[in-house]
Image (cartoon, rainbow, N blue to C red; front, side):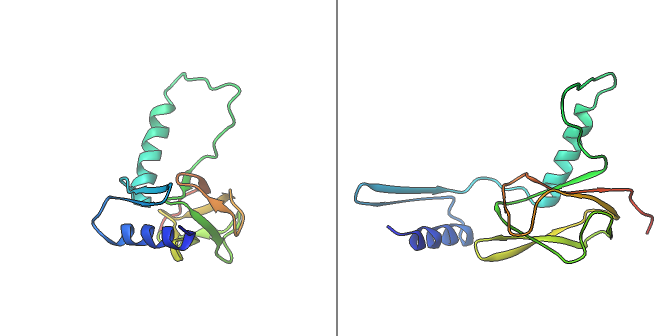
Length: 145
């Protein structure tokens, strides 16, 4: 069984209503199962809610690295990250603006700004692999439209 066949199985699973497929060839068995996937916007909302709950008054987190203030934008899927020209720390962004792309299964998926503001930090480099939930950008200082 070669990797091209596995990629085709993943693509078929992605395009159909089937949630699981298992193929055996000799002693090798490949099982692919689709789980529930959150849209990037849903994931962002859950992260903001979890962050707000974790920051209870009087809670001290000595010794832990500080998270950047503002909105963290995380990868909504696994793939290869591609930078968009001009999106560097200090760049002003508006809601819906494309900040980067994640290439997954030969498709380019846009990573968009949820609100206006200023890019404080870019956590990944162009061409780097990213995991689901990995930090991509920090945006602060929402601007009035």
